Image 1 (tube, rainbow, N blue to C red):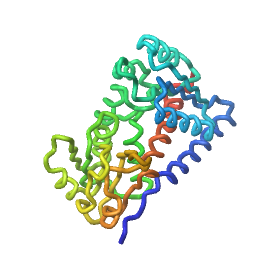
Image 2: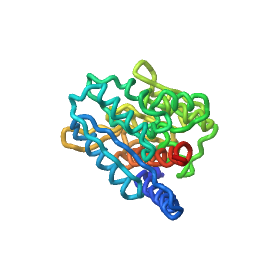
Image 3: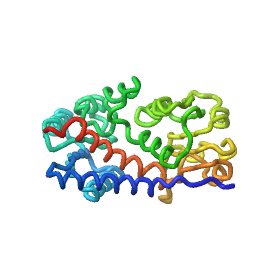
Amino acid sequence: MPAQIIDGKAIAASIRQELRIEVEALEKANKRVPGLAVVLVGDDPASSIYVKNKRRDCKEIGFKSEVVKLEKEISQDKLLAKIAQFNDDPSIDGILVQLPLPDHIDNLAILEAIDPNKDVDGFHPYNVGRLVLRYPGLRPCTPMGVMQLLERTGIPIMGKDATVIGVSNHVGRPMALELLLAGCSVSATHKFTSNVQEYVEYADIVISAVGIPGLIKGEWVKPGATVIDVGITRDEHGKLHGDVEFDEASKRAGWITPVPGGVGPMTRVCMLQNTLYAMTQFHSGD
């Protein structure tokens, strides 16, 4: 039997509807709506599109959104001052600084400058540390989105063997932590792993987040396994590809995400969930 497709677009749309209902309840109670500030440095086309989509999402569900576009040459001190302004703004519950940043900006300094209770990307060391300690607060959005794909599709998680390919700070490492928290036995592979194929062949759940088209061969997939493809690469013709050989993998997997339309929509909607969570948990009394 061919794999069942995990429709991230449909699940994300359902979550946005749930968020809209919660925002309407706030409005009926004469409470303010959540506020999100997005800072875009430079004019990277992909980042600009992503920010545009985030603003559209906010409008759809009724969030306040503020987008600040800064020149690529801005000094780090001026960028830090803008973040401090949003930290002090009681109408802003979430701050998102769109990555990548120019080379002259220290990424870690920027991440650490964001109020941890407004860190809706979930990248601040404080929030990552809470996830490590099994007391999650604001969670990294892509791993959070993957977990919701699994849970809302009804895929068993607890007690399963999971392999994560790629150990980036934003996806792979927190993804492994989320799976551990959900009761999986987790293997994390990376560029120094000599036998990635063996880890994939053994896994009930495979999550690849590398960005190399065709890295994960379909024949490696364990029959009935769940395959989550986070990697996304655009070729010279503009077509998007994932890390997994989709056609072959879908002949063996039980469940599989497409690229596009799988994990991507979930990353954006989880940022919105984090913003609402930040407001209700930390800022509702402002």
